[in-house]
Length: 170
Length: 170
Image 1 (cartoon, helix red, strand yellow):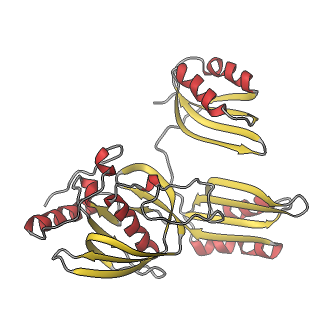
Image 2 (cartoon, rainbow over the protein chains, first blue to last red):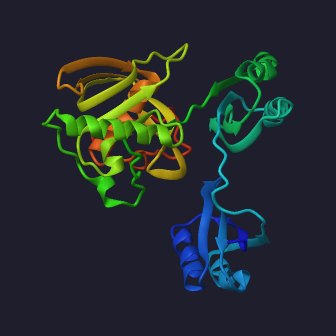
Image 3 (cartoon, rainbow over the protein chains, first blue to last red):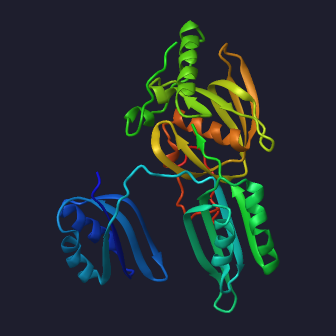
């Protein structure tokens, strides 16, 4: 199947968003591929691959309007079964301040590290926020060279750990 | 000797609880040879369980390569294996011959104590840790009709959120 589209929907969180959106897709003959849906800062965010024929925006417009979601659709060239298995996990924790993500990911990017997934959150309190980030990715570089790439960041108050991910097949 | 067909989800036979082996005979030895050949024929699997080829008996083959930081018993044939004790827990990524093109994070005990019979029916006991303990738990789950996808935790679940490993799961 080559007619995948990437759909983005964002709006204030409330119960029933996924049910209503996927029902609209189903009723209009669209099917779901890989998807990421989560609540971020009180918003509900949906990024999903869908495949089918017809006018996707017209199919989703009524439900998006009803739920107050912003809708965006892109044609994409990708498809299913293109997973890369992560072999490196990076955890970062530190007092929240500007530039943490840029510093860490910049150091990793220089080694050729490819981020497959990044999750970040701010814990702690309003007065003393703590930034927590976990990254899973693929790297050809050795564990030692990845650790060397981020080692200077510890001195800036960031706790950065790089560990291997070994996928068990059984 | 023959390479057997690996059952794939959603085959119902993968959800059955397997029966203990009672006859330690030539038929068992012939099956063990086929099971080992099947394990080696596919992607690099560190273990295989009899129900994965449709034989609903409590038989597991494990072969976890030794590593500098993770001990291993090497190649093991485990009949009627029984986990006697669990200790600690850790998150790790797993995939399965019976679940193509999907991997996920699963919490397993770090160390286990195990009793099993060898191909001649003699009782053996093992202490396992790390990757080998994970592989054994993955395979014993097969004997109880459980797949790693029955235990996958959210990608956002790290060990910050503690979960206790329970026998039988669910």
